[in-house]
Image 1 (cartoon, helix red, strand yellow):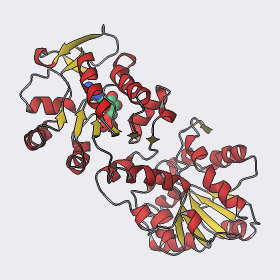
Image 2 (cartoon, protein in one colour; image 1 turned 180 degrees about the horizontal axis):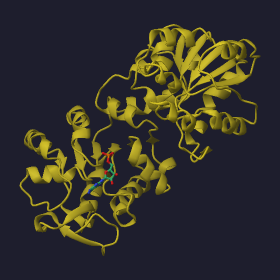
Image 3 (cartoon, protein in one colour; image 1 turned 180 degrees about the vertical axis):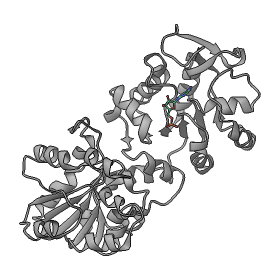
Image 4 (cartoon, protein in one colour; image 1 turned 120 degrees about the horizontal axis):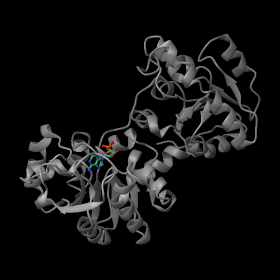
Length: 390
Ligand code: AMP
């Protein structure tokens, strides 16, 4: 697959699909990580004297009232500060004004176009990969670089649509993500998977895809209780994914030696951070109790498995990490992986947010920016935004 270094972009009009889907409150950007992550590709294009056209979505646009809060303009300002260079902004996604701005670009000029999802107001043109829209955007440039990993699992006009009309390549961010994730195709063994989070339903595809490759799958978080229920334990008021008890039974029967379940938990009577911290073994839950985090015996059990691992992939927090008391197991295991230098990929979303909170995000082998895209990769699915480049 072409990376940005494989194609000729020198002096060309380059369209870069970025992921500038940043949290914005009252017109202010709260976290600019995603903008910083795009700089390497943009700077490379500047060095190659390109005329740079940037596209990104921001939030969801379903009705006219969604337009203002999803205006990309604050991103142009922040990007300009980070690059220490002017960034032009066109608040239209098509039309004469945009075309004139594009035609007037000089080498090393940067133009950010308004939120691609503004086109969703008119029959979901962006999100349904409308042919006319993809062709139109492609007509604005000469080369296309996709660097938006966060939307690589979607076939939209601004990624797949444009790529089908122009010479295309992936940018540095997507390259970095894929290089890390590809190591999972032939992982170093022992290969240990850590799964947490709320629902079994969301992780079925991941379990089915990874169970044959993994040496162990350590299951924590709310989803552990459906497995424990499948084994006949009383789980009190803990989270239960009733519909998937049979799936858990099947996995436990087929791979009894691979699945490692918790043996104790931090428990409460209500879903709150306010009760005194206490732990219980899994065989002594009362009907009134719920488990909100793994207990110390399970942390030890998981740590022993992890110490043997040559490679780890982790998706989903091991407890209710939003509550100060019940982020304990997630933090302990994160620190353990870092301290013992265990090659770990954090698979996006909550696990990365937890690592960020614990201050270890930059110390792991790879913290994916992907969320949905990473999860679909772990399910063994192809990513349309990447396939289109091939
Ligand atoms: P997911 O999006 O599936 O990765 O789930 C993340 C959510 O799982 C977080 O919001 C956690 O609060 C929640 N979670 C983790 N452990 C538990 C638990 N033991 N009980 C209830 N929710 C949990």
